[in-house]
Amino acid sequence: MNIEELVRDSLREQASGQASPATGFADRVLAVRRRRIRRLASVAAATAAVVAVAVSVPLLESGRTDVRPAEVIDGTVAHPDQWLPRDMIAAGRTVLAAYYTEQTVPTTPYRGVARRTYWLLDPQTEKYHMISGFSHVAIAPGMRTAAVLEQSLPTHRIGILDLTTGKIQRWIKVQHGVGGLAFSRDGSKLLATTYSENPDVRAPSTVNEKTGEWSWQGPLGSPRDGFYVLDAVSGTGRWSSVPSGREINGREDFAFSRTGEQVFSRIVGGRDGLQQFYDLDGNRIAAPANEKYLRSDVDARLSPNGRLAALGLTKEVGGSPGKSYSSIRDPLTGKEITKVRGAQLLAWADDKHLIAWERTTSLDAPYVPRLVLVTIGSDEVVPLSGPYKNIGKVVWKPVFAER
Amino acid sequence: MNAEGLESFRDFVDSRSSALLKTAVLLCGGDRHAGEDLLQNALAKAAGRWQRIDEPEAYVRRILYRQQVSRWRLKWRRREVSVAEPPEAGAAPDAASAAELRLVMREALSRLTARQRTVLVLRYFEDLPEADVARLLGCSVGTVRSTTHRSLARLRVLAPELAALGPADGEELPSRDFSPAEVRP
Image (tube, rainbow over all chains, first blue to last red):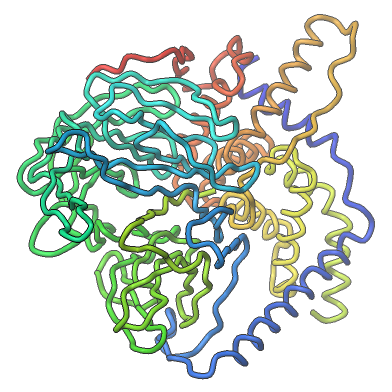
């Protein structure tokens, strides 16, 4: 017997053991449908009552203008009372799988290292727990597996962490030191950025005369020297050399392109968000046609169906709070299709909704954002987290994964 | 939906929900409750345009597959999967080991991603050719082929007991040695 035959036999055996649905299943379905229609109607009515002034935004397909209520889509779990999340935040297909804070720790009088502290979502308790001992965590789609690096960078082994047990399944040993990790969109490949020295080293620049605290600056130039593309299951793969050049500074991790057939990273240039693509041999190449207009500093990139591109902040409207709008473009032409609420588009929840940072203060006040769910074609936002606190002192960065 | 549509919808559900539920449960890795939930959602969507649908069963199945793959409505957390009772004591050794293997396989199938499991259900339970699977899931034949191979490889990793099985046509067996693997450039 080969494995295909066993799969076939097992599926058939499992199917044959299933009893029919209970009597009245059709009526149950119809009742569910009626409840959904009523719920949608009540959300629309409640939103219309609350919104005194609404801004018209162009509708995606028709080009007309309209005002629509914010939509709470399936799978939305929000905690607007928690500025640093303690309980799971999710929307649609996307979950806040982890987040990290970063702090520069002095190691010698003339040197410090930026260290991350990660909080990982425990799928069983749906709470975030701090994990120690890891400098970098990448989470595979499906939320079952993470790849981790130990504190001392660059490191010569990559841990594969089973998120259901919290235990390291195995270590992948590598010859070139690794400093950053990313999974491909389907989770089958792991991209490990290699550095000849720790990319998170900082040097003291100025001292605050009042507090005596140092501010730190990263190095000019980068010790980045290439990347591994590894099979996520077997851990086998190969390394490609990429000369660092003058267009990157410090840590600039590679990420997979949409198809996983190329990699890219941010480069420094005449404007923010530039990106450079490479083939899997490390040769510089032109951007794929559907990623040509994307920005390296807008993490949401292409919608799940690939038809829309999330771009950067394009408009701000005064008020209390102020409103930010980011651009949604045609990935192939770069032409703007519409604008959507949000100062920074972080991840797509589905083909019509995104998770974004959005300001909670007026345009004159300091920028204090919160995570929100935004809808293409609607001017409203659904808060997912509380407004940021201590923004000058604590920085937390979200890590999203497809669930 | 008018009275005629309601009657036709009820007839369809009464006659076809048993078969559809089998598929839905398999798509959900053996979780009966999740399977009912999935089917209920698919039927509710179909009910919304019932009188404009030409082939109801094909339409509902397409929603099932796509809904499962997109996983919009699913928590990733795997619910506990109850498996059938263990093989009876005293069964012939071959029969017992075959039954055990099927149990191991069911458990491994439940731990695949939704997309991987959906492709295997379509290929091996529904016996659909790769081109039909690609059309149903809205992807290329190459993606179906590579997902199938990766899913089979993943099953072997999840269940080392399957090691003795022969490879599928065209399948390359991955290394099962997960002691720290030396990766050479």
